[in-house]
Length: 265
Image (tube, rainbow, N blue to C red; front, side, top):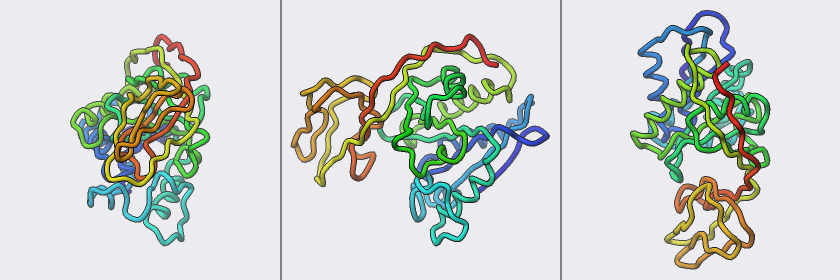
């Protein structure tokens, strides 16, 4: 784990990258900010988490870091020990955690619940949606630390790296670390309701678009050509043929559209 700081004083804001070693977009954004060393109005902590996995260009060394919080300092696995250190490092900070995905190119935010902080900050980010994962958050950082996660785009792409930089700077502006104003937007909010399983097969297909409603009776995916049909309407989230081993992704319901504030605080 690598920890740096810009600005003097005790940070109440943190930026986290490299939770997964095959998602370098956030690391590039953090490194660019450290190179530029902009003048800040309040201090910010910058953390690159799983350096071992990043060096090996794998998602994790022993197990998924974002599924083992709060961790254990005496655990046998690298990620559980690291999770414990991260909780200690971030415990007093509102944390902005950057990720990427194989399922969707446009950035979106992920929160444990739609609280006042999420409702205020997420509409100020260049994201297309906010997803509440409360019922599916076990072991994630956000169960221990006040966290806003963002999916920055397609894993390994140049656009994800560019998006990570834009998202990070918008967040730091919204919380008063960087000077200036943000651009606000109305933001649809979705809540995860179920996982969408997939059976063992050689080939998988997905026929639907994330965040676009699937009607009851519509085929939405296939395993070895065997179609799966929606029993009831749902919104697909993080759905892709090969993004996860045992599931296509998640089903969600649409809750509301947040009306954005007019400017950053």
